[in-house]
Amino acid sequence: MALRLGAAPAGPAGTGKTESTKDLAKGLAIYCIVFNCGPTVETKMIITLCCGLLNQGAWACLDEFNRIRLDVLSVVAEMMSEIKDKRLKFTGLSSFNNTFQGIDVKYMQSVGVYITMNPGYAGRNDLPDNLQVSFRPVAMMVPD
Image (tube, rainbow, N blue to C red; front, side, top):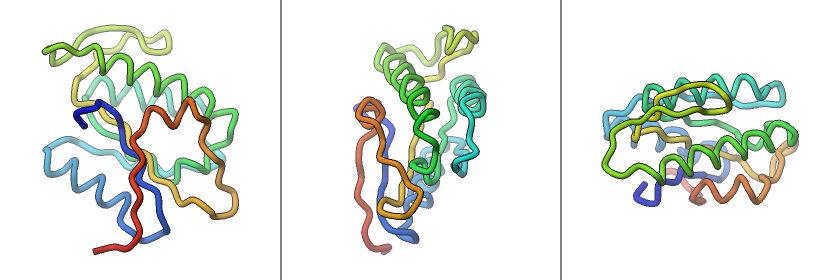
């Protein structure tokens, strides 16, 4: 979190990737939305979600993120890069107004985007490199 990056927990189903993200948000008293991703996710859906997150300073756990189609992932990569760049510019401010994808939003410092992935399953895509740099990889193997 000090690096101002989201996390990308990856591992087999049932290892607690989503639950760990939700519990961390709960422990920090931050609202966390779990969004189940799939091949039907469109760019407009992600833009709407991100605008809400930025305005509220909430977290999103994008569950099974690597199921999103590659054409949508390329647009999402640009959005995540923009959010990361804005978060890096926070200097003691709790929020500031700016535009995101042409929409006026209030950026809250506590905003966070976390993605979970189940690699190796059918129908999963590899994340583009420009998207991977916005998230810190975390390997999860066995639930405790």
